[in-house]
Length: 316
Image (cartoon, rainbow, N blue to C red; front, side):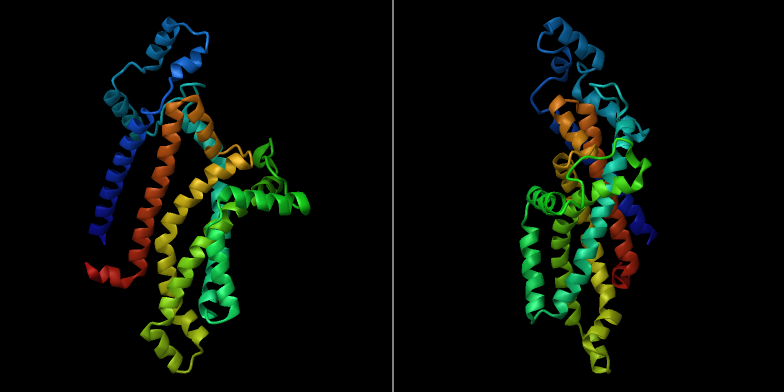
């Protein structure tokens, strides 16, 4: 197990290094010049050159990259080229919206996918099971923007239960208002991602039902449902855990879109805004954090799956 952990840590470090290089050099291909944006349309070439010199944009790209990676190791993601605010400070502030949104969406996705996925498998030959499977297939194909618009029309316009957009100015000083403002965005992400995960849960449950140990338990006097719940669900849980890393990536991408749709002051909206401003320090910091979260969670899920599944431990 220790050897596996060390190998996983090394692979994680290599993955983060490759991701950082791809993020840094890909962003430099984008058109536009932040120095020109800061100087404005009336800025002279001399002013633009002075700003470039001040921001260190004249330094060769490999040296800029090494300086940025060194900062990451020290916990410093740089400073915004536009506002002069430390990237870590700005991301930390915006994360107070994005992190609760993603966690709430994940809870909703699990509440949608796990019980209904198991039920769809148990009743696969009935109209109920077919309805669950078809509905999940349809919802998984719905773009997040459309899902958000439909939910706004239903819960904000028609029923008036939830605010259609925005976040309280005082933030989390009133947790009730803050949570109410996040419910529709979280539902938008959670329902779509939950439909995707439901299909995995259904497939894993159907596979578990066909296993010898479940059939043996059923032959011993247990009902099929009891046999599945007692002996099959641990394997279903392993399958669900294995796809959670992909779900986290979907949640983060969904958060970027949903924060724009619902005008939430989170990391996703910050990212989109600063792409337009050509604030490369802020953009590369936000994208790297998103990437790091996905890679770290993927590594943790690999470790968890290995710890829960004795077959993986015995394989090496």
